[in-house]
Image 1 (cartoon, rainbow, N blue to C red):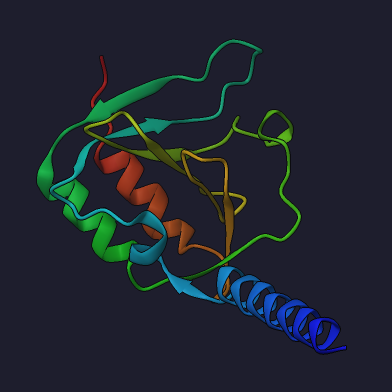
Image 2: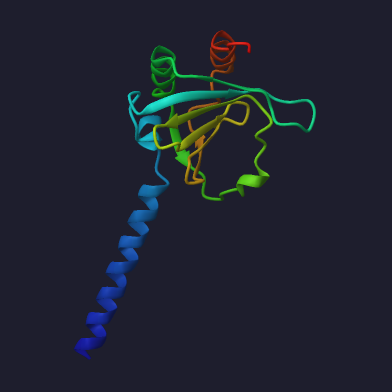
Length: 149
């Protein structure tokens, strides 16, 4: 009888722990908590714009530390929440304005500007809790950092 009670207590404790972990995983987080890297760890920004044809969207790269700092400062004001229904990456529409932050290990965090969606290198997806991105700021940032090649 004592063994059953002990096993029941263990089962309840395990269930409570799993529930707390799930609540923490899906609670709101600042962008810096999701990114988990400072501006010194971001090696470059990769900008893409939508393509009207089926070809790979045009992209350009910037390693300017000031641009990286400006973007991270802008993003730090946003609260994110992990999506509980993760879309398959192949089903996401990447044919839009995107900004990807790449670290020195080539891990990417991609921002889908129009969808207000953040996709990490592990495939986790986060949505904005405090409204859509300030698209005027984002488009201005993209266009001001565009270096035609």
